[in-house]
Length: 108
Image 1 (cartoon, rainbow, N blue to C red):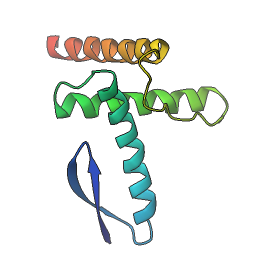
Image 2 (spheres, rainbow, N blue to C red; image 1 turned 180 degrees about the vertical axis):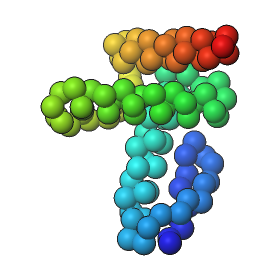
Image 3 (cartoon, helix red, strand yellow; image 1 turned 90 degrees about the vertical axis):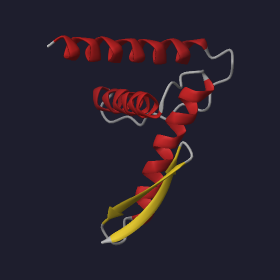
């Protein structure tokens, strides 16, 4: 089993993977890092766990879009420009829904 050190939001994580999968794992970490950078660029950082949760939700949303679009490839969002209101609104909706789900779970 191989060990790879990846960096996400400035933190190093050592992760095990199958031999030969190191480059793939590094690319996947790059995808997560890209979403983290996207969230930070629009001012969405408020703690490491929340930042990673939002990045996970963005990835899940993109995966959902790929599945519902018949496997069509969706390109990840670039770091947004200040005028990128539609992406900001989408991220805010995803974050608001995550907050609702977390609140519902706490009420159980």
